[in-house]
Length: 410
Length: 90
Image (cartoon, rainbow over all chains, first blue to last red; front, side):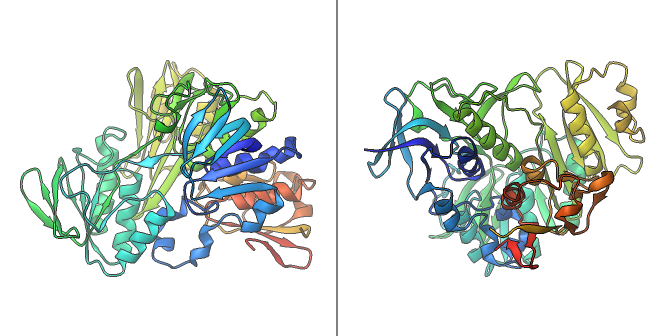
């Protein structure tokens, strides 16, 4: 049986950053990455950017590492193979081709998978998801001939796909289940600003709507809404969320909920097993809660810290991460914990013209997160305020005032 | 690897993912527009191409700069060697 000192499941930014970090602390330690995608590290961020989709930048811009980088770093890269079982007592991972790999230290950096549709007709062609490079390649091909598209789901993917499809000159109808875009993460005012931008950009929006069936022969030609209205289409892009693949670790004794549970050192409940990236549901020392986040900076930093701890360090993961996107002349930014959970208080700073706002989310009198529409200029200061964790009991009126300079609270 | 002499951030490509700040926080930070800028001597923050010798942290390892550039999800950081040759993206 093959044996490596450091085994990393997942070849995305979390896993690759971990593999890059290990030799700095343990230059002689052998290291292997297993990826279920047939590719080396690429930019998952670029996948949803119009310039990439519309082939305005060379395709090869997607690669973040050259093949020889792995050899130079002494990393064995095993691609196109999926981990199917973990024996955390014997310290063995089994792959889908039957290969067993023994390890001393294991990192699970498997990211998340797209949630797929379970409605009638969901197996038809021309229904697309966006998570992997192969997904993106399928959409790129379809965009060349499609004239009409339906986008399902009001979130980052829905927003970015609408932008790309409109830039490609395609008629776009966005179907969302909720009464406004990104409900309940965003309030009605924020949702209305995004929808106004989408509609100004030519996107038709259908609210409060579930699609009950996809119609067409082999390929999707339309959808039937719950109210029996039929919308014709040439393609459908579905962005209805993600989940963390945890079936393969069932029976390993590793605690998992929505994601793989870790402590603040990114260690799982099994000895010598760590988790990092979108799939880790980690103890956040800033918030004092278990949280799962899906963004590039979080995954990168977790890969680094997990690797250091795998090499014998004892470092807490501590980061207030954020994600920013823009399109249709509008910018959307999220920082920290934006879940609309119980016990949260939300203060909305709305500019006089109403065109931009920051919603500051407090828990136990401290800022834990924020959503910003056209207000990215407050992102840095709000991130610092989250890190600082200062009580806000006397500052409610200041937070509410859009003209008040938040920097004075630092 | 050739020695890195010059660092350039393309603001049009930068989306403020902060990966460079996480890799090399003595060199990069995000400005008010959420774009990466370079920290120079004397506390100057610059959007422009910077010589390594002008960095506030002029002793930063080339590997650290390369990691920062390679982790950028939009490949917005360009590194050049002493002959003016582009080291990354290669």
